[in-house]
Image (cartoon, helix red, strand yellow):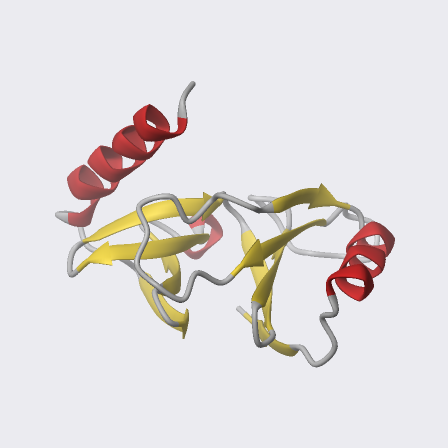
Amino acid sequence: MNKLLKSTILLWGSLCLASCGFVEEKKITGNYYAIAIDTHESRTLSYKVNEDSYVGIVEACLYSVGVSDHYLIAVQGPEYGTVTDSCILKYFIVPIKETFTYFPEEGIVDPLAKKECLDSATVLGIEKINWKEF
C-alpha cells in the first residue's frame, strides 16, 4: 500500500476515533504522543497532525519510550497482560521530525530485539536516552 493511502486511512481512522476521546494522552516530545483510546493496553505511539487528529506510528501496546536529541526508541510489549522477563519486547527507532509531516513513519527502524536496537542506536550515534514508562 502506498504511503499516501496508508496515511490517509490512518488519519481518517484517527478522526473517527478522536470523537470518542482518549483514556490517555501524554505528550512525549514535539508532536509525538502516547495515546490510548479505550484502555491503557491500547496505548500507541502517535504523531499529532492537528488538535483532534493523530497518525499511528507504533501499534499497541506501547510500554515505554526513550527520548534522545534526534530519535525516539519505542518499546512495544504484549497488548494484554503484564510485561515480564519472559515476554518478548519489540523495539522501534523513530527519527524525530523537526517540522510537521503527514508521514511520521518514514525512516523507522523496526521491529528489533533489544540487542539489535542497542547496536543500531550506537551506529546512529544515540547516546543519552531519557526513558518514560507507562
